[in-house]
Image 1 (spheres, rainbow, N blue to C red):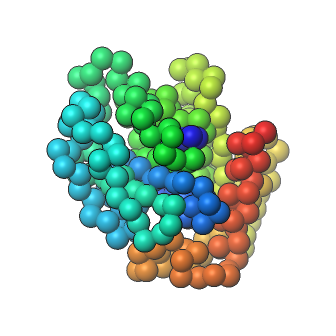
Image 2 (tube, rainbow, N blue to C red):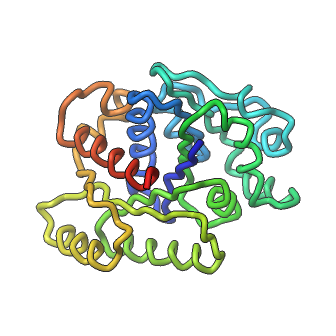
Length: 248
């Protein structure tokens, strides 16, 4: 089982849409896939038409009073399950802080699922916190969506510094471009700069497109309501590129 966290310090960068679409593509290709919606806003849960509510909230979950497999819901798509969000996740930092080895708690909860899933996608809230450290400890790969803007560049550098300071040597950070408008010279220039200065950047670009924005209306992954489009092709190519990192 590989754990892939979709994470960014900055909000509004296409993190949830990328989580939902990549998980859908993985499941469609036969991989047993789970999405864990860790964001109290519950956007991933909303896209999968599942109520963002878990019995006992985050306190029972972190305390181990409820196993994750008893909280998991099936989606409308084969091979794709969801562990819903809960509004109590806004307190996850406080709950984790009360536990011994707080940063190990998510990994501990995920371990029993290792035989049930090939991939677990973590949809993470945009923050640097104790929860973030627990996500980093539980994950094999940190997929970080980057809009080609100055602020996104700054948050990527901050994230790299944080990972280096914490000596998270087993965590692979893989940034990729999202919400790209190639008509904008700034977007094109920043992408060129980043690809040259950050060799870990993926080459695939996710465009800023209305069909992706429609996910909120359709409440399903992009590929479930549009079979062919530049956006769906980009997500499929992004998943293929991610797999080459996993298999290498």
